Image 1 (spheres, rainbow, N blue to C red):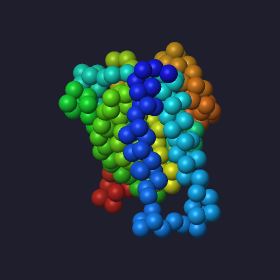
Image 2 (cartoon, rainbow, N blue to C red):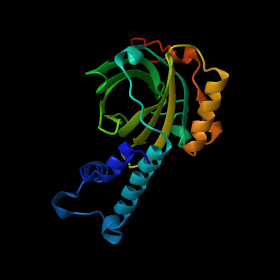
Image 3 (cartoon, rainbow, N blue to C red):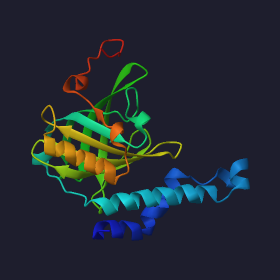
Image 4 (cartoon, helix red, strand yellow):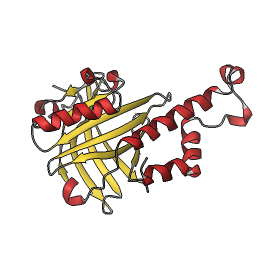
Length: 223
């Protein structure tokens, strides 16, 4: 585990904050019947999330980015996740990137993207806040913890851990580009990364460039 990830693992404030966000304390000491019968269940869920983030850190160093590398229009080329329903058509994490822009020397990263949910187009803007370990956090369909895995002049590989409102965790690799496709070596790299995160290769979704151009009508539907 690299130094940045080790510092995160040792950061008790970070651990307590994640605990309070994913499993908020019961109001006035009240607990659900299931919590009363099994008080250790929340702790098990919490430990699984911490373990997954630790595994993510063990794989790759979090790369820094600069405004010159990021600012501009981008398109999602590939997206792969262990919970494939999250990134399949109609999935909440099937994000069609449109634009990225850094703020404060990339201490903030703004991403504008479209999703298609219930046959309706939605445009979202999120702003990731960078932490000392190089990871960004933001809210969308739950809580997200993402960082840059690989980068070139016109391709960026992101890894994201999404924890939805129910506590379900999804590992996502998203490839954004300024061109239409990856070269052969980059496709092999994507397969390798998916294997490292225990994501089946068949879960890979190829978002062709035309899929990134979503036409919004007055009734807010996609064509």
